[in-house]
Image 1: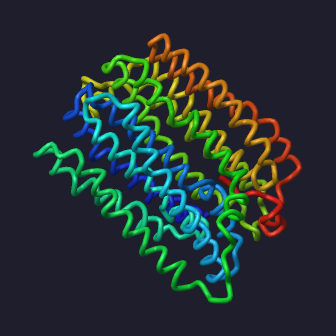
Image 2: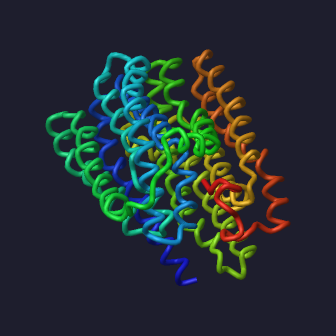
Length: 419
């Protein structure tokens, strides 16, 4: 239990710092750009998240378990080198595309800043965070992912607060994060890659990643499009209030990711004799987190967003309730995917769940945008996460009853890695 607590502390520390970074900078930005620019800036962030998913192209799902199953530093270097080749090629296409989409979606207020943040966040698809998670390297996760983001926020803070230089934030994200990613790549890929170990061709890497990338992309199709949809269909004031609710929800989900990251390797540990008990612990932990976080978002969301982002862009109560429901559902779905279905070679179930969620959620969100109703768009977010959980629940329960295979009993070709 002591090792588990240390793992939780290590793997929650970095995401909490990542969550702290926007809390430092976004309240200042929201007050400077006002309700006219806040929705645009938030839309740029959401487009950047979609762009990041495009650059990662499944490595956030495929990478951690491949690294965890590797047996040597040389093998891990090959995996990282494969990812760098594919992600750099994809980044050359996706980064300009993210800027173009952000320009098309954003209104005139702070459009350049919205484009810049979309580009900067898309570039974060080059992060080595997934590699550090697979290694169980909480220190590397902190040094090469969390600290550069935190430093960018701290340095940009006075520049924005005193001079209104919003562009300083995305510029510093690029200036500090990209060198950190490069240093990690040099230490863990280039300097360790032996000449006799050759990485496969780009086409082969993409074919290998395609199934997990499809799951990731479909999930983010309904998970990160709510703000652009709201920006397109709502008034500036309503869109900004919706963006605040969504922003609080997205920051909260970092805790879900942190707990999932911390527990995944522990639950799937090949030497564990009590694997079913570990599965139960993960389910209970995510259930408690989902319930507490969902209630907090539903009840405290309007007050918290008014305090953090300013009363002019404070979230409305009804959308916060729907975001609280969504938070509970996504927290519960996380261990079902990461610890049960994907390790048991049930990626098709996960894909069906994400397709169902995307169809249900996007349909309701688009209707809400057409009606100009922020509450209906938020209902779409909740409906998408509930639909995914409903599809996943029974197959995951059946997998739990049968017992999931240990990591060393699953060949990499037979089972995609956990999300």
